[in-house]
Length: 208
Ligand code: 5GP
Ligand code: MG
Image 1 (cartoon, rainbow, N blue to C red):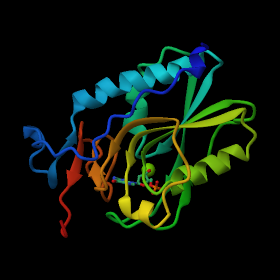
Image 2 (image 1 turned 90 degrees about the vertical axis):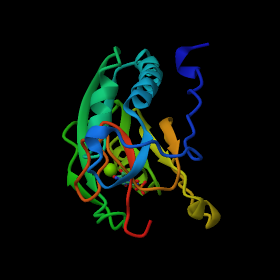
Image 3 (image 1 turned 45 degrees about the horizontal axis):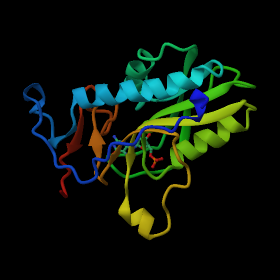
Image 4 (image 1 turned 135 degrees about the vertical axis):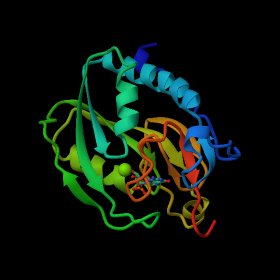
């Protein structure tokens, strides 16, 4: 079987997992607890990196990270991929304040020509799917050979599924399935804060 036909790994499912205590140096941050620790993230990235590395056997990849959330994930991921790749970033903002989602806007346009190239979009989290859908549509309009997607987290929102509004866009590579909770750390922020946490934590929201 050709390596590119191998199935992606089973996605670790943290939808029912409880929170762990926040590691000591980070206890002053407004967190309910830790969902994914740094070692768990590192181990999973090894698998994602090898899945993506297999794809470089069919030709070089252009990894397109979505700023700012994907910056930490991208930095760790690419350092484990030994195949041929290039890295660039685009900026998309969803104008969120806290957890409310608004309209999408480009904050940094694509800097490279992606015509006939094999593109891998990298983002921090797939929630409603609007961001990945907009970025995919835009990149596909520029004539690439292919566009695939890799996200660290995929959030499962029961309410969206019940309303028939589940994301139509899928990511070919997903790090972890997580519950419907607002998470921060490892690149993900709340109002610009907490991106530097080396783990994924669940925030303490006023209403929770
Ligand atoms: P979507 O467009 O799929 O609803 O959301 C994707 C974007 O929203 C992500 O790139 C991320 O910036 C933001 N987002 C969605 N859920 C969360 C979350 O739980 N925590 C943080 N910090 N950002 C989120
Ligand atoms: Mg983002």
